Amino acid sequence: MRFRRLINASVLAVVAVGSLSTVAASAHDARPSKPQDQSLRALAAKHGLYFGTAVDPAAYAADSTYKTMVDSQFSTVTAENAMKWESLEPTRGTYNWGPADALIDNAVRNRQLVRGHVLVWHSQLPGWLNDGINDGTIDGPQLRALLKKHITDVVTHFKGRIWQWDVVNEAVSDPWETPSAIHLGGNAGSFKQKFADLLGPGYLADAFRTARAADPKALLFYNDYNVEAFGDGGAGDKTQFVYNMIKQLRADGVPIDGFGSQGHLATQYGNYDVFQVADALQRFTDLGLAAALTEVDARSLMKNADDPTLAANGADVNARDQAAAYNYHVLLQACLLNRHCLSFTVWGFTDKYSWIPNWFKNPPEGAGCLWDAAYNPKKSLRTVQGDLAAAGPPLVGNRIPQAPRQLPRR
Image 1 (tube, helix red, strand yellow):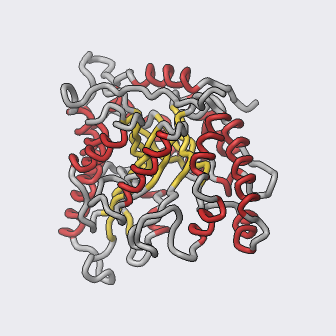
Image 2 (cartoon, rainbow, N blue to C red):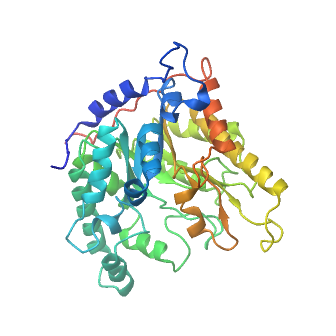
Image 3 (cartoon, one colour):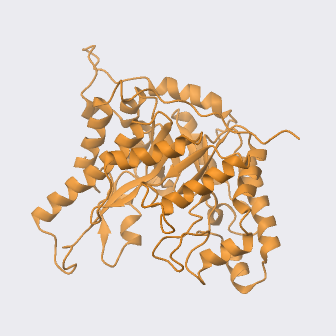
């Protein structure tokens, strides 16, 4: 019989906190284990921080080492793909709940919380929906109705079992797109822009209100990438645009509870320092939001940066590994410094199953995870473990729980 239990998210949180607070100790010694021998969930527990990973169900079923590490290292899990629209409703009107339900059942057994990813996104839509948008058989009113039904169906099905929902994901453009001023959508003429235009500017507020009506207790997040730090505040500053957008949603009474910064970084770029990221998180949490790092990795060029046809030499590899570790350090330290930063989730933990090499091919990129493909710990892992072990008062305090914002009473 399938092991399924509807558990209120607040109950899950209490159970998981109890599990988080258990620190491994030697059977013959009262002293705690060395930080590098403790799980990430145990190291994060002393701060009330949930340390999570995205989970690949196929790897979880086929690879015993992968399964053991998911079960033991992390206090929260995210479905890498199993809760996306294309996975849940591949045929119109017919839902496939099995893989997502199994992930949640495993999480309950392991005393883990679940981040739901994702309700509204222009990407990884089912073929029938993509085709209808592209050929015009699904117009704006129809798409809005389909989206409302999808959110209601999905959130209702998982009600009480999801801690945080990524309600809307990657809704705004990037400064290198056309037009360069940040806006809802993407490149002129792109599918992303068509999706946004069909839904209209009010779809974000509608999505959050619909999700809240379906589950009053889940935390509702806006989630995006390249929003780790503010720029110049001008028309091309994506973080500023997202900040202004969320500030207005909050002012309008929209029940948005959290800001999710994905944290996909790359070592070949000039990235941020701890205080730039901490400042950005602080400005968002000053709006009354929780914060979370939701999809962290730090990828690198896998060939010489000046000539991708050349194999990397030892010096390149060492520099890459140290740069990746620094990027993890920056994001984690910034999260620790903000007591409203509730969770830190890596987008996969081993290079063996990383999404990066399949997406970044020209030039090839990879090596973005905490463990390598043979499950050997990397400098990034040791840096994260050290940061969690060494952090403490007065600058790093226990997390402050977020109360879900409710719809106004009528």
